[in-house]
Picture: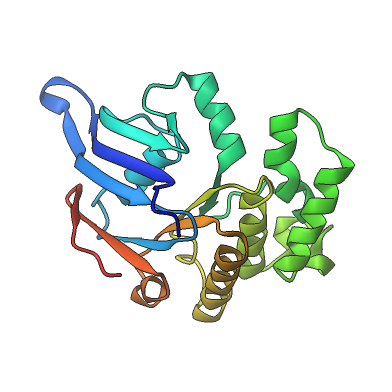
Length: 230
């Protein structure tokens, strides 16, 4: 693991609303993430986990603070720069997979790459097929989400997150809607890809068993970092 952080965030503050209705969700968060890490982000509902993931994923801007990734100053980048950076370097896995119901598994996996390029290519299709094979779904390439189980849909979502070979994958409760066996299968996949590719994974979870499988744990409470394990 490199001594230089992949992600270095300092003093992240996030406020919503204004005046009497203003509320502060994050209170000066400092966090470093390194290539090759598998990190659990823990905390009760309302602790700020999803807000922090949204900021680190450039889906939301902080109200204050610095956010650096791969030498890019993301807190100061404009919207176009953020979109290009996000498409090239960050993948996402959500609790409710967010697959497009009218697209096949293969088409869903290709979507981030096709959106970046403005079209589908044979190379994208080949990579999507290889990723679906890697997650054990080569026989479901042409199935739509409605014809797959919850665990299978989440495995498609994992493959989609990896289509652009991102340096960072942010997973927001990726096993929260799955039974134990399916959750363990998804974590097996994330752990394998982490080891094989050096991709950094930050996984928000309430599940202690999932957190214990990570190399490091970061805790949030009331929008502040509390001592983690690892």
